[in-house]
Image (cartoon, rainbow, N blue to C red; front, side, top):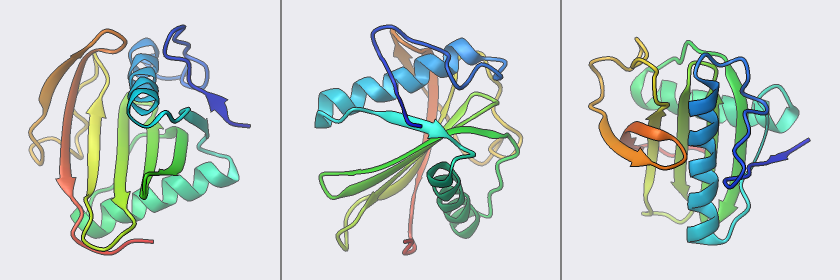
Length: 157
């Protein structure tokens, strides 16, 4: 069952097993606030083990493998997939505190990218270390978020 992420009263529901659960919950709430403010979209997640969650995790896994030969070692906890303004957004929140989002414009020639966000207090995962430079961003909900991204070059369904 989908869980609507509240960015006013931040909850660790669904991410309690993370060693940085509070920061990961804040990062997830930060995403929810962004989508509400920019697109008037209510951000909801579901367990990564649900049917839809598994499909989202698999799509993100395929894109990472195909584009950059990347395999994430952490366990996915929650996932979200939705379309807004002609863009499919996939999000996966991992136990380590890592959050990955895929922005995939459905129209040919549109923006397509993978974003990585590290929760406050977590180290850069081994699989990303040295491969990406992370910029810092302050967030009232999530503390300091470190983020990076790469542009998707191939076609993915």
